[in-house]
Amino acid sequence: MLFGQSVFQSVLERLKAEDETDEDAEARAAHRVPGLATGLAFDVMEGVSAASQRVGQAYFDNLELDPAAAIAEEPTAAPPPEPVMPDHLARIAPEEIAAELAIAAADTQQTLNEKRRAFAKANHPDGVAEPFRNNANRRMMIANLLIDEAMRRLPHS
Image (cartoon, rainbow, N blue to C red; front, top):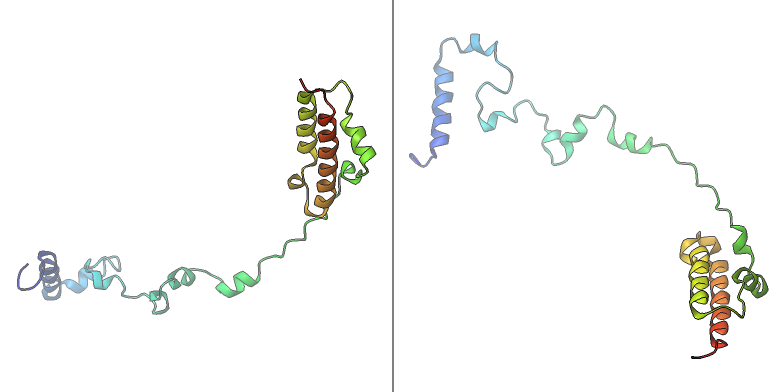
């Protein structure tokens, strides 16, 4: 550091002093690109609006529309269509569910577990739309009760 300045700062000051004392500085300035005349950090913000110096405002200065108007003009999406309940969720009587499960006396614990998994895959409340979850939950409870009863009746080996 030279006289309380870094080497970089002293070089920048020397370059700026040379630019100011140069006789044909004005002639060269006509051929320069604005903002690239000196390369000094304090020249970077020259010509920038005061509004864009605020954090987050520079982006909005480059928009052609008013930011508040752009947000207000977003088209409103049409409401999604009402979901249609699948036919099988309308059948909540134990007799109808037993017919779907087709539990037979020849079923083993393995086949009953397979039937439980297949039924749950098609009817689990988490897999249906919100308005139909009560029906799906009721179907699952009845199916589980029927399969559990069939498993209790199996001969124990």
